[in-house]
Structure formats: C-alpha cells, structure tokens
Length: 318
Image (cartoon, rainbow, N blue to C red; front, side, top):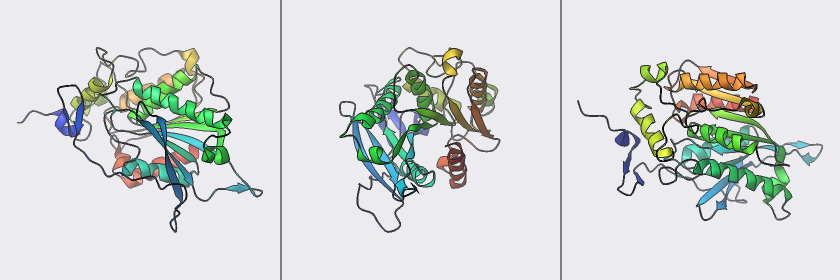
C-alpha cells in the first residue's frame, strides 16, 4: 500500500524556501466593472486595492436592481465574505467564490465585500486576521470620507454589517471579531457573524476526527498539515488561533452579537464545531446552529443544492 501524502492530496508541493507551489489552477472570473450591464445581469462587481504592500484587495458586489422605499433607495446590509481554502489556497476571484458572492448580493440583497487575504505558509497566522480587520477599517473609513467608495456611500447600511466565513474563513471571521470588540468602528456596526463549517482544531483527537480519520475529502493528515502550514512557527494545535476552547474570555465573548453556525455530520470537525457552539452559548452569545447529519466538509462547493440551502439560512439570518 502506498503511503498517503497530504501534499499530493492538496495538490501542492513544498519548496525548499518554505513556500508552496499550488498546482491546482481553478478558473477565475474578472469583476464585471461598474457599468457594462449585460442583459439579465443581476449583480455588478469591481476590485479595489486594500493594501498595496501586502498585495491584498477586495471585490465589491452590488445588485443591479436596488430595493426602494417611497422612491428612495433602501440601504443594503454589508456582508464581508472570507473564503475557504485551508489557509493555503483559493481566491475571491475563483469561479466558486465569485458566484457565491454574486448569489448572496442578488438574493439577500446585499453589498458583498470579498477579501483576497494573504495565504499561508508564505504568510502565517495572524496575517489573515490582520487583513480582515484592515477590511473592516477600510469599510468604516468610507463612511466618513467624502471621496469614499460611491457604492458604499450610496447603497450600504453601515449599521448592518455581517462577517461571513466558510471553513478557514469562519475561523478568520471569529478571530477578527474578537479583535474588533476592542476597537472603535463606528459608524460601522457588526450585527452578526455567519460561520459555515468553521475550521478549528486541537491537540487531543475528538470522536468524529478518529471516526473520519480517513475521510476521502478531508482526512486527518491533511487537516494536521494545514495547521502546520498556517500556525505561527513553533505553535501547536492548542494555540488559540486553532483551538478557541483553550482560552476564551466569557466576559468579552458575550459582546459578539448574533451568530449562525453551520455544520455537517460527515465533517471530521463536527464534534469541535458543536463544542464551539456550546462554549459560545455558555458565554451568553445568541447562537443559531444549523447542523445536518448528512454531508461533508465544504460540501457546498460541490453540491449546488447544499449551497442553495446554506444561502437560504444566511438570507433568513440577515
């Protein structure tokens, strides 16, 4: 029997200098730009540089048909989208992420801001949290800048901002939120957080991790390798970036606001996700948990029906 290689499973190879070569070239889509409306186009999108030095940027999506109240345009909630990809891969411009943001913007309807954060291992944690916090500050600054982004100025409701992350993106949303509790972001107000199959871990194995250790999609050696590539050098899986149960401040957590947590029974991380929900509830957070017995980690990237179900949960929540 050949030895299982987690690098091969992830379609990446590690270079001598500690960087990765990513062999998976998923198709990418450009932003539509601000004005070229095609017949039947429901959403327009544009790219904005966030931090030139870090090569980070955001893609902003807005619906072409805007709901109105008494002839004035109704302001839309803002959803900050943090993509999956195990810290090491994917982009807000790849087809799946772009389409997810498109659908959210159209169906909720909302202004969606997808973040192109830095990837590990070239940039280890907490770089991704820094990028998310920088995005929130960028949004906040648009509110008071007369030369700020026109879409946000004209269409965004700054009092209704949500953080939405899938897999590692959910981990980023949570850790960014903990930091944001200590900063002033008015007039922006984060009123909810959506964590879709949060990627969290720990040194001690859970029952679901052991039972699903050889999961064909997300096996344990792959999960371990992703943490090894993402965590700060010399830190283990009980570091708070990975294991939110090791150190948490109940007093602080209760200010998080509403949370929606989504998970699937065939995900090796399901036990951790349920413990995480318990910890949040015990800390006084209002949590709505949607756990389905059937399904695996990132099923919504493969199964359009699951993606549609998750979108309807988000729509209800927002």
